[in-house]
Image (cartoon, rainbow, N blue to C red; front, side, top):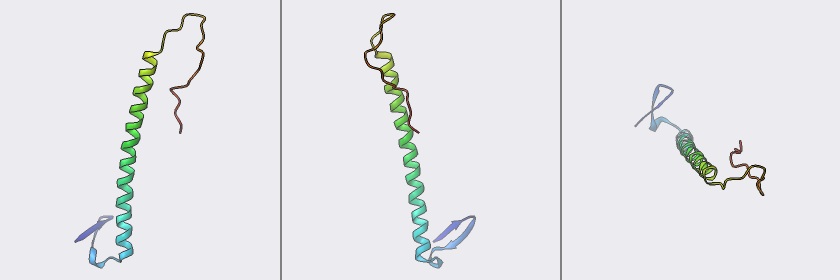
Length: 78
């Protein structure tokens, strides 16, 4: 089976086992990165949804009244 790397085809049988292992590791790492990016996007969507829900469902505060507890629901960790 031929493997293409940087536009050049190599026969799998001609590759060192360590090179074949590294190819598999790169493929696994790229798949994990794609999964992590999808999971990150899902978590951002969930956080946005719940933040909006919190804001939309907070009890109204009359003028001059201060909340008893402050929470920053819009903060994001880098």
